[in-house]
Image (cartoon, rainbow, N blue to C red; front, side, top):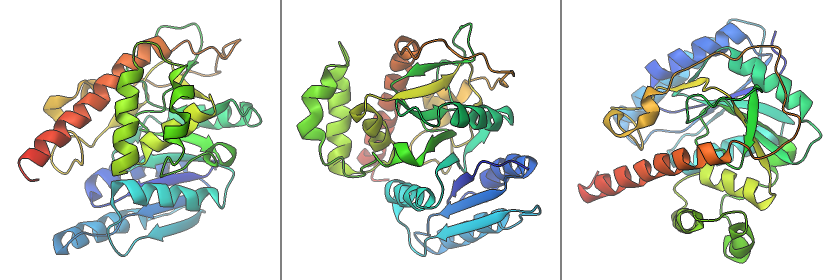
Length: 293
């Protein structure tokens, strides 16, 4: 039985939830947290209830805890509230959403690295996604500044304590954070300005928390997460917009080969991909707002 807590965030997509939950059932974690947003309307209510029914089918010995919202909190507030609820109870956790389908090796990858870097406060997050698909390296993983996108990841309570949904000190710390960037800070300034005002995300704030602490994010040498959420029902993206829908999913090999140093050696590869990903989201949101969706 898998001894690291797993959290699954769901909403109104029972078929996608069923695929991700099937991987969790194979894993059989000892402790499972389910965070579910509430419905917007009557149709939503039916889909939300169906998604919750999927995850009610826990057929192994498991401590299941649920945080089910009666009303719709949205894609920003529900995850941030839910993850705070999780880390009020456990000191580490692996986190998935209803559209992030991991290779089964992802869980062991996270388990081993949560243990290895447990007391290393410079390491703040472990990602299962690699937007490059593959980064050639002699090691099993590298380090970056970027936790985006959070498509299957893990962290510790000690790191999550830096999280602030409001990003209240962004204006105060902006110049300090700029020192860690060269030619791209104008883009990141625009992103953080935008989301600190609109507060329509939760994951930008998580990346900001890592930047405040000058933290490291572990990125696997190969992508281990397939995003199922493109197309109908997606909150932000569609299939024909994103390079990420075609990323290969490659199992991790064990035993892990650990880097000798915690250099930010994956930054140069990942930053252009993360920027491209965020530009797609901004473009899609602008198009959606223009047609009144």
